[in-house]
Length: 298
Ligand SMILES: Cc1cc2nc3c(=O)[nH]c(=O)nc-3n(C[C@H](O)[C@H](O)[C@H](O)COP(=O)(O)O)c2cc1C
Image (cartoon, rainbow, N blue to C red; front, side, top):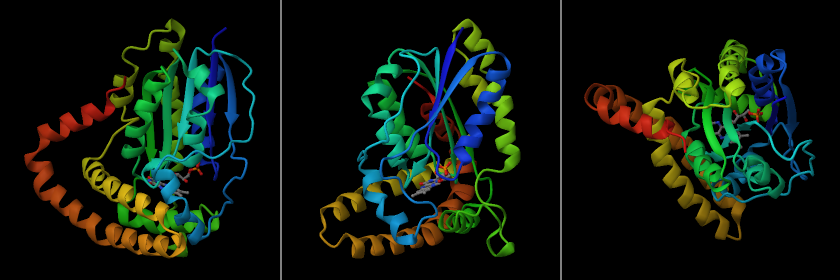
């Protein structure tokens, strides 16, 4: 009997719903799926206040771990690990980062096939780039990755995610904006993506799974967002290093908040226009190569 571990953190329940759908075909096929939702010992309250939301930025970006609530795994080894993650400030979230550095979890990662899966606003690439070497360090076999995102315009989802994160209500902001987060239809479709795993799991032969995920667009990076993330990631690191050294972190975080709003509302739309006029028409080979490098595992 194959043993599968699905492990993740989720505040709003969105990533839990995605993982549940992904695992459903595996459970229906008779596989034994152990699901573990980890928590932090001092977990972040949901909904967030604006101040608390921005206060986690330096720890996210600088990969600071926090203490996890202790958790038990039933097995000492698995045939497959389904590992959920969410980006916070373009980096793996603090709970995810704390999990992947946990010694018990690290010991089960060793030599085990891992599928990573995320549910995000729309910027998961930087976090994913940080997670790939973490899995390599743990000697895991990264065999596939899935990324679900909010398909609305970048500027629209900024409003809706803040509404959701600051109220814990996944409903329409001002009854006018679209629903926040990953669309229900995309979450439901995760069952079809999960089904693709079955033949690989049965044979314990994982070559080709990632290519299938790419083919069905279970993971489909958008170049203009990759470009924005690349630049923003560098800036976030500078801000995080600066703020972490300051006594009056609160005031500096308030400045960072305004920097971020300017970046999101002025710089990001400019990049989008440049993407449509320059990148897309003239740099298609370069874009293809960048995407292929991002999606290459191991
Ligand atoms: C503090 C914080 C920062 C976030 N930063 C990002 C981000 O950089 N990129 C992104 O696409 N989504 C971001 N999100 C959205 C999350 O990745 C995730 O989609 C959302 O929190 C729902 O996931 P959950 O299942 O953990 O509740 C952020 C959320 C939080 C709470």
